[in-house]
Image 1 (cartoon, rainbow, N blue to C red):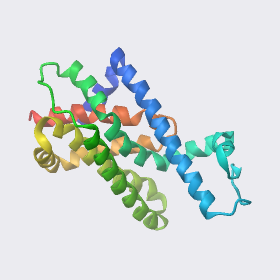
Image 2: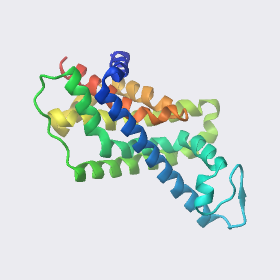
Image 3: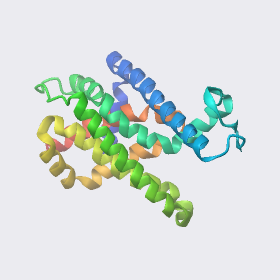
Amino acid sequence: MILASFTAALGQWSDGRFRRVVMIGVALTLALLVALYALMLTAIQWVVPETTDLPILGPVGGLDTLLSIGSIILMLAASVFLMVPVASAFTGLFLEDVVDAVEDRHFPTLPDARAQTLGEGLLGAVNFFGIALGANIVALFLWPFAGPLVPVLFWSLNGYLLGREYFTLVAQRRIGRAEAKALWRGNRARIWGAGILMAAPLSIPLVNLLIPVFGVATFTHLFHRLNRR
């Protein structure tokens, strides 16, 4: 069921409307990544002396640093970790467009869903961002003891978080938040697996720019498959 949902999401690439959504989604994801990376550089400037040289970047300071080749390379490397909070922010800003494109093609007979307001989307994104960030900070203290299992820890933790959040947000448009949570609880192992399928490629630079869009599409298919059982 998970792979069938993912395959269906990939198969929609032939849909011109969906390709447009993907392109806009990639641009938005990249903008969020750059913004978060710029905040990270600003935090570094606050913590370290201005004369401190960082690996690849050299002296850290201002727009020149952000636009340098070394900084771009480092940003792609940092995206392995930064893309999880970026993906969490993406849900509140762009989820509706992706779900609508998928449902219009694959589930055209469905009545209109209750669309979340911008305020609801932003509030949900901020809440999930805080949870994902906090959980990953705690996980950082466990990583030194995980050894070669660090990727497994990273994918498992964020697969759980992303799976729960993406599935609930997609489902509540159709069945309300209480029923969405109940459906998640009854299928948490399967949804966790789908979340891991999303979290793993988030750790691959450049590929990870596509994952928030295809992740939403996958969980849209998964919700409809589980809801009709």
